[in-house]
Image (cartoon, rainbow, N blue to C red; front, side, top):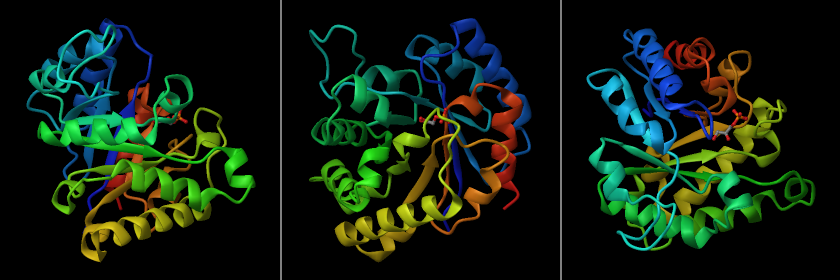
Length: 253
Ligand code: 13P
């Protein structure tokens, strides 16, 4: 049985002080959560402080990206050792905003995934199609290229430590959520791709989150779908109440 994983991607929101305050609220609210994995991804700047706040709680730390190099002259970048040192467990990679604005490709996603796994951390690998691709009948070919690209030369054992976040680009930050059926259909397909690469048992165990305008009003319906194992939440993760409502919807299933 796959457990739910609800992750808040704070993106470029919240100052350090605001991040600490939000993390404190989430820690307090999630004291009784036992079945659902709760993850928050503040900015790098706030991550070490947030790590202190969530120590010993039910909340785990993610960061929003890393560079695949160990160290060196890469201005503005952060290495996996740096985020490991502060206690991050997950690293979000391949987010559509990285792909769209910062030249992330399936190849760099793969390099980052291997680096994260090599350090003993867990990548949350984001994939998803644009509206143009969906309308042009390219949904399956886009998802296939993204999954095959991300998992190139990654063993089945390592693949099990990863999480996939299916985030249709047209649903991110738009308030236009995929219907339960659209999300389920795409995620069923993603699971079939994992099965092709690693076999049925790995595909059945690997968790696939949905992301894109998920909120307290639509979370229960999405989480009820067979192939949806959680959420990667942007806007609705920026307030403790709405983030907790989504966690609670997962916990009650
Ligand atoms: P929103 O929930 O704001 O649509 O963002 C989703 C997302 O991109 C999470 O990574």
